[in-house]
Length: 279
Image (cartoon, rainbow, N blue to C red; front, side):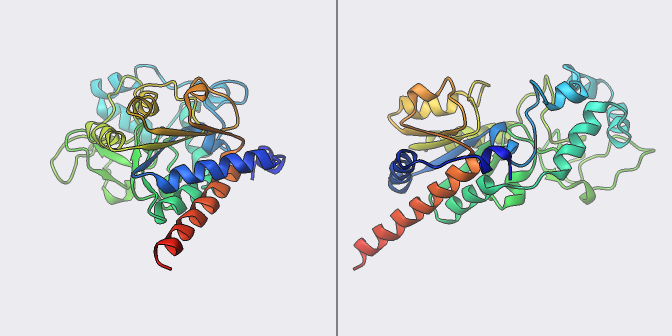
């Protein structure tokens, strides 16, 4: 548990706001979550930039990484199998140690409750999947998976045989080139994920925005689109963001503690509603 979580004090006023947010979730037709790096901080993953950031510590990946891959996939795969760059080693080591926190688990609880219909994440750390999220859209990919550049099928690394003497490995389904699923600088977001995101947002009447400043596009437009159509947006963030003034409810504090209470009150609202409907 992070220091921010252990030092956090739940006030009666904040609890009242969580109850209000739970009412919105319980009464919504389709809730979609949008999560960002702030949620992963509580799992020990620092942000990429700024003091203590991964790229500040280890250096940034190349801005033309995708173009380099396209120019020489075999070389890119040799570097993947035998990383020499500090940023690659540091990222893999940091993400490999991380485990889902209470925030990830609470989102799974909302999904199992039938309230949360989809989770769109900007994170590549695999923590939502480890926690048990099923309706998951990883807009920037997943560092632990491989993806076919042609048919977009995703596989665990152990599912495909990689011959160091015959690179790059090819997709077993269509023969396309396999690459890491993480979206590199300069790489388009995979079209299957982007379609899924827009489909989820189009049907969404209540969006739960967790641990993100919502300034990086296309994800930044999702809560704004929900608001334009008259939907509700609930923000969960330790800090104010550019989105805060537009939100229906803004809950200030660590995602783990707030989402746990939000799940608790939403479950209570759902149970109370069932009792009233079936006396």
